[in-house]
Image (cartoon, rainbow, N blue to C red):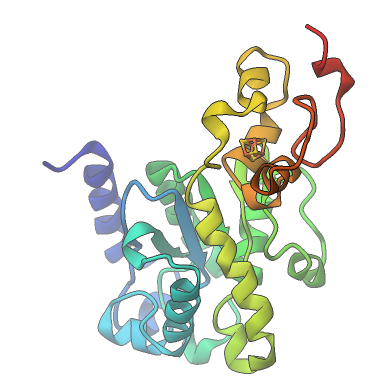
Length: 258
Ligand code: SF4
């Protein structure tokens, strides 16, 4: 049975396929819509289709798609379990940088896609997608390109939206020496694809449900990067930690007393 999400996405994709809002519609062969599972927890957002994608009308099938597949394989994530889309739906000629008016003409489609999918975690790939998502959700988006690079591989909460920026797989075509570092960052997708196994019995859940703990701790750790949680690490080693220790390892004495 086709559900409401699928119906809304089909309608959006019909509009995307007939779009002639900017000059890129004159040079593309195809317009590429998002692909993947509608209930995906992770929504990956790249910049735009490349030549192969434009010709075959499929996402990530060129050289950067092959790298993405390797990175997903290392992270034990299948394409079927995620949703992938682009900030700009038509190919950029000769892979040039996008112009601001092209981003403005196209990005409302991405906004609608994000609203329809309502994925738990948005994963912008590379600078342009990350900059767009930060401008959309952050009150003070980083000003410089280098600032975004520093955010790759970190789970961030932007006004209730979880964002996990990653380097674009194509960056490894130009800098293969970053492969190991990039694979470690992509490995986190596996962590982010499910909640911490201790969550149902963790005191943090209890504190949160009783209104004694800020939601950010649950979103960033228990339902986010639980591998980074000091409580989780201690639990795995069977090491003592008080119930009122927070996921970052700090102690909140106010939780100790009812
Ligand atoms: S606080 Fe840590 S150990 Fe507890 S559920 Fe959250 S991530 Fe897991």
